[in-house]
Image (cartoon, rainbow, N blue to C red; front, side, top):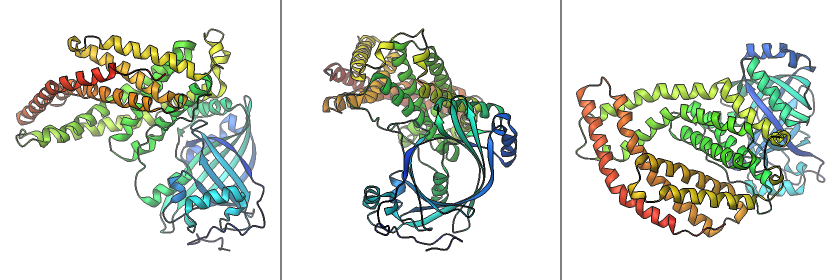
Length: 534
């Protein structure tokens, strides 16, 4: 057995070491993590709702995280750790995401007492051990990093919930003696109403110097070890099938959009790459579409309020995204020309100068209390099924009906709207074409939401492909039309050479619009020929 001092260099998973499968607790962990400072922890412990809880004093927690040399478990979103607390016996814990079936603050968790600091997979039972060995290929599990945390715990009754509040102050430690400070509050639902958990978190954020922290200790540790910023996250496939109820679809779609939104917070804060902001705006558009189509039948007032806030956030992120889109399009287009204007390099430097404050504003927006409250409010509404308590909504009878029938009716309605907005497309103004583009986005996202309900058919994939092509052509035209206004604002007061370069880019984009007209109409004819799969 490895000594408890220091991290063992390599610990082999011993699948057959236990005499038989041990009993272990398996369930869903529902937890909100809030980041703060050491001073913020002291202030939080004195906040009346937390101070009223029953405490357990301070404990020293030491957790060692394991994976193969190739990070096979991490690649599957699996976390394996052994934790000790003062002189207590070690506990072996296995965690996995539960996003396909639950919200962004849920994880699957299994815990079992361990005889020492070597991760013995057989303790989880033969089925789990076999699954993990299949993932690792039988490769030895090595200690990756550890966390050392001083924790104070309070047990709180809030609303209809029993909640454990853990106040952690410590570090992530690597064998190379790298350290990352940890200062956070974990609010974990022990029993009762999950909505009360989110409401307590909302109240705490409003009253205290706290921000929503969407990265777990394990994610922070693996990122510290890799030395690379986290990657942008796209939307995940929904775990829906033909038998899913309308209400089930609604919850999973909105949770999925929320998950995509918050999953890109850490990448935004740690990189200047364009993709995190782009994916956040995509998630907010998906959310707005979902709130629109569900609100169309329910008329639940809070959906309208959430949709307005999602629009505000997307608009606020728009400046940074517009600069990113221009920069990327210029690199692929005008800057590749042998006859590009002499001031193009100066123009691109000017773009970079404007990106810095735009990104600073985006990061401040995401770190704001209002944005945290927006996310927690969504989760509170979903956890409570708040629409069921609203006597003013219509569509109560729809909640338990199949999502498939709702999706079919909605897709047909959205298809007709697209056809109406695209009628006589050659004569449509750019503003009208933009309206068509919005209608196509609603149709495309609704098809993605509904994919499992229709068995992921080939016809559905064909629809998604054709709609994506048409949407991309219209999007490229929209970007080109926006270039002139963007550059007019950016080159105000710039040297003449930079202004001439801006004119060159505008001319390049205008020439591209002429060619895209034929591409647009070909894509439109392809779309019109599609037969509904629903």
